[in-house]
Image 1 (cartoon, rainbow, N blue to C red):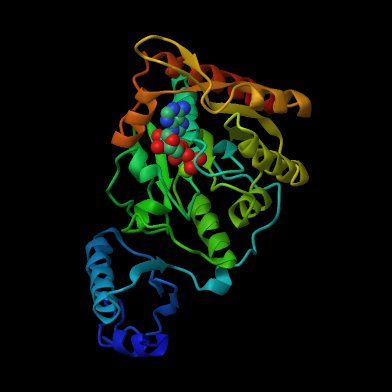
Image 2: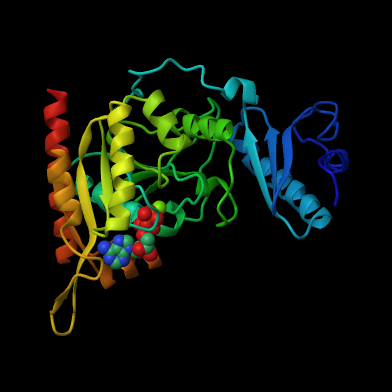
Length: 352
Ligand SMILES: Nc1ncnc2c1ncn2[C@@H]1O[C@H](COP(=O)(O)OP(=O)(O)O)[C@@H](O)[C@H]1O
Ligand SMILES: [Mg+2]
């Protein structure tokens, strides 16, 4: 098996386009790190703050790096990440809470204990609901392990980074969107180490020119890991929305997520029960495929607001898979709007 050192030396044959002396990648010091992990190669390159006209240059350069690594290790998936700061500078040096982000009134997190319960689906449709209530809304897909925003919005363009170090979010359906998935070329989940996650989340929050937003909805990865901690410690969250299916197994994990936010002193805006009922589109017979009412009971037991139920819906699943917005005339869109209203009411009370 080829070694990391061997790859670095090989990469030196590629000239670093931003080096005045025309030196290769290794000599110019632009390789921040290169790691071979399981079936992946993760290469982090230090690049200068780019001017708009440099965008093409960097894209070609990244392609060259990827091509070289792929030829050397065809069995592995290649991830090339660029950064403007050395990792020491990425470590948490920012002041702890309260630390809002200029121009964003509220940051809310959408969380779940388990994956696959519809957290991203709820985050997106909650954001659409808030927008339909007249708010300016952004979505940050903080699921750095399995970003889904590019797929849910069918976005394949890359956000541009301009002078002043800021990415422009992608604008779609009247929402400002940012996801690590826009910056990576692959749909494969990425394995980050803790400190890398902290750096990435901080960058996604602060190095994006979000503009003026009333609410930034953050779609968290499932569980209670580094992303949740970084977010809760670094920014002043207005609150968290917990998504669960009614099943016992999902509720056990949802409880853990609730416990974590309580410990981190993040207000809980309430619980959404997703996939709570299936209404047959043909005969209208109601079936509780994943049981029913469990999340509502859990919310009541904990003294948390119950925000609403979202049925298991073919229309919703189809819209998500196609990356299309949900038809706002559908009944399920109204359910999301009601949830959005309950969230908005709490945020309004918070502001006063
Ligand atoms: N209420 C629902 N009805 C039908 N399909 C749903 C519903 N909620 C989520 N899904 C589908 O379930 C899958 C997982 O949802 P997703 O939002 O990606 O979950 P998570 O973010 O929790 O991993 C997706 O294919 C999504 O379209
Ligand atoms: Mg998700």
